[in-house]
Image 1 (cartoon, helix red, strand yellow):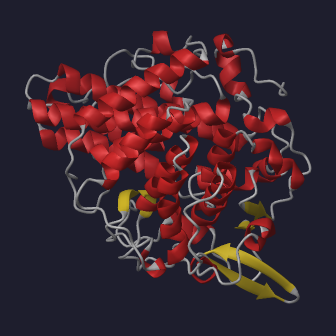
Image 2 (image 1 turned 180 degrees about the vertical axis):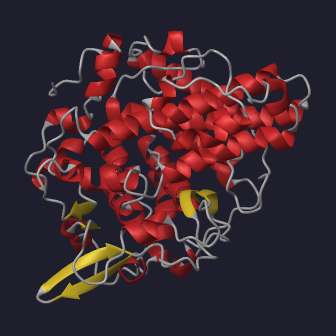
Amino acid sequence: MKNIFKSTRLSVLVTLLSLSSLSCQKLIEIDFPNNQLPIDLVFGDEQTAEASLAGLYGGLWDASLVSGGSDGMGATLGIYTDDLSTVFTATNNSFADIHRNLLLSTNSVVSSAWTNAYKQIFMANSIIEGVEKSKTLSEASKNRIKGEAIFIRSMLYFYLYQIFGEIPYAIVTDYTVNKTLARMPKDQFLAKVESDMALAVALLPVNYRNAERIYPNKATAEVLLAKLKMLLGKWSEAEQLSNSVLNQSGYDFQNDLSKIFLKSSTHIIWQLKPRNANDATKEAVLYNFTSVPTSFMLNTDLINSFAQNDLRRQHYFTAVTSGAQVNYKQTKYKITTVTNTTEYSVIYRLEDVYLMLAESLISQGKVDQAIPYINRTRQRAGLSALASSMPKDLAMDELRDERRKEFFAEHGNRFLDLKRWGILDQLSVVKPNWDVHHQYWPLPQNEMLLNSNLRPQNNGYQ
């Protein structure tokens, strides 16, 4: 893979902090500078080791699958499914092709999703190796730093797998190993990621290392592991993990819809801080328009799914009229200028855990136990409570409907949900070019040219 260094020597602090600004091609061509700090200095104390982590988090904010910008799953999988529409129509426009489900292996957005993720996986592997080799870090610091890096690596693998299918599993920084990795079979890959996630849960502390919840803790890792357990159909384990999060102190359900995306709210489990102080979140800027939309807008099919008395119509999106045309923009995040002191980009929040727990319970036939968790978000939105006794299939329909309304345009949740439920192909009703092979994106052509072991290409693509 072209985003892995040739050298087997670990990158130092300065290299880690600058990785996110390097092109993937440069990552295989550069040599380490002569003034590079040796690894025992980079991971010699907690402060410098955490500085290396800062570079990794900066990359997540700038360009990653969980970024709130146009390269994140919220936007790319939003237009791929039925959350978002786009006005891009130019020939060879990568976003337009994603929206029209006319993907090619040469699509630049597809390539960026892959290369950015593997670049960040390499950075995580560098940190893990550095911590393991450190002779001076305390055991507690080693566990926490390693836990954060393993969590991020596992999260990226979890999302990459669902987008691309079988993929390489890289856990070292040796270029000679990584450049020829083949796609790991599904069961083996998921077992390794499951084990990694469990290790992150074990290593990470309960308490946040920052009051703003901008770094993952044990509960964050439990949310991610629960998501994987659901994907694997391990519903009892997903239930246990969800309950573990809900039973931890410090988390409170937010009853005020106007405060859902405020960084200080205690229903937030993990969020990303803007790189520059007072910058708006990427989501606030990306989805904002005042007349005719210039990039992304909400899909009318999504808008029409909301009941008129659903309070989320007031808080989560806004109608924008231009002449005779009415378009809708997402307004979950409100501040679009560099005066932002109240919003960060929320990755995981408590509502997700409530509905994850509800799905796990329904899948085990415990419908009466599940309904109260669905009702929390319904009633907050001004809708009537569901009856506790209803057939399992009807309860699942209600849960699916609630997840769509609560998490649209948030980190690809719609795509991931439909895929987990086995109903992704229902998109053919509103997506004229949808085909069964669109459950996966094509592997980037440039990656396959560099590493023939990535073949064969995903079904339906050349």
